[in-house]
Image (cartoon, rainbow over all chains, first blue to last red; front, side):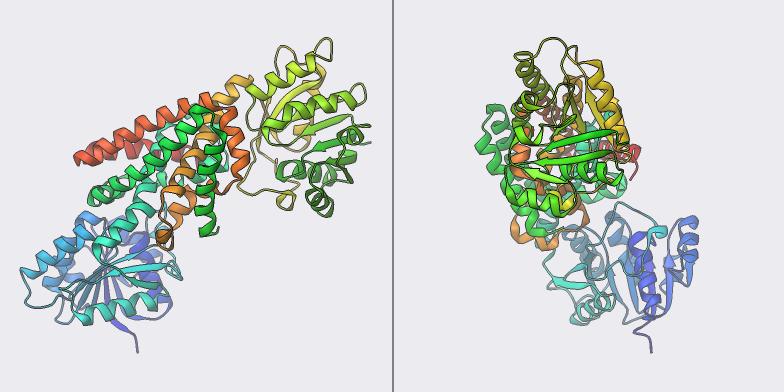
Length: 285
Length: 285
């Protein structure tokens, strides 16, 4: 028997498509329905085998769902969850895959509380498995294997939803961690959103005529700047306070580096470079 | 017949070791001698097959050389070239593989002019093929294949040295480009030295307890921060003026991003992110 009877995925890009593919490859779902606005993207997801069927109608797509996963850019998540909750059968559980959680979860809970009594069948998720690649053509059924997936239960979250979603990500071989939405955003600001800002600034600041003389260093350091600009606009604005705090800390270290270089202070410069190396080495490759 | 009778490599780490391996695999040199101060590093280079023999004596190592390549950290290059020039046979040609060129070439030429009349048998080189890896154990005979190698002839450079060294890198399958030392440093400040500074600052600014929640973005953006701190201290100080100019430009773009995030100005933010994406996309993967 399948773990899920019918899973509706709203937004079948890299993440949504990989969820569909993972569910199908592992035979975890009886039926996977892809929901989206763009007919081309939906056709791509079907061709890739990410979903059994597709529709542009949320109401139709979730009509039989016991699980709904919203994988759109963050600003659209709350309204899609609310819309799905209106049309899905009783007992359905809802989650998302957004890269920011505090605003998304607060807005979603506010919308659901207006319609539902008691604890909510929604819990925020963030599978930390993004890429500068986008679209269902980049989807992989093993995208979440050994990747950290943060779930963010709150005082409003129904325990059944928490257990179901934890189970869902584990069945895709993710490593599930629970954090509050606020703590999630505090951490991700520094491990993901700030690096994106910095990579974008470095790429934009490099004169185009110098690109032929870049090597592995520039290309690694700027790789994520190739990510979708609109998606990242939304992430950076949804987590602006924490990202700016991370930027303050980064700029403090950069100012120390600048002072050391300006002063020709080799000892101080070597010390800061060694700090950076120690932190990077701690991660491994 | 071999292209070079006897090649002496001073400093047999990643770059020096790869030169030796490339020369041997392609049978371009009758004999390759590795010269260094550290017995362990020399033994590693021998074990890796990078060199036929090793010595800690520059005088002995270059005694029969028709080509001497200095692959040490930048601060040591001028003195090693001068020392090698004192002991090598007449007709020998000298180059280096340092990541900065203006100071290295000026200091080397000053030392050589004090000993030699006329044009100099030395030309600066920079194979743009570094890595965060170090040591002969990371050496590869194909490291320079299709990689850009900048050579920096000046008014003092003998044409025979330029032709020999251009030929040398081409025989290792590098793509040779000529630039002035100053222009080389202006470009590399932005394509290599500044990215290192930024990657180091980002790594050092990330709290250690958040590392488990990093993903591909952080790990790409900070990869080069794992590079050897002492080597990079020397590079950043040797090219401090241009690196600081690049830092000014980077900080201007970063300030525009900060303002857009602070103001919640999505349109402006998306524009700057799109600039960064366009520049990164222009490079390809």
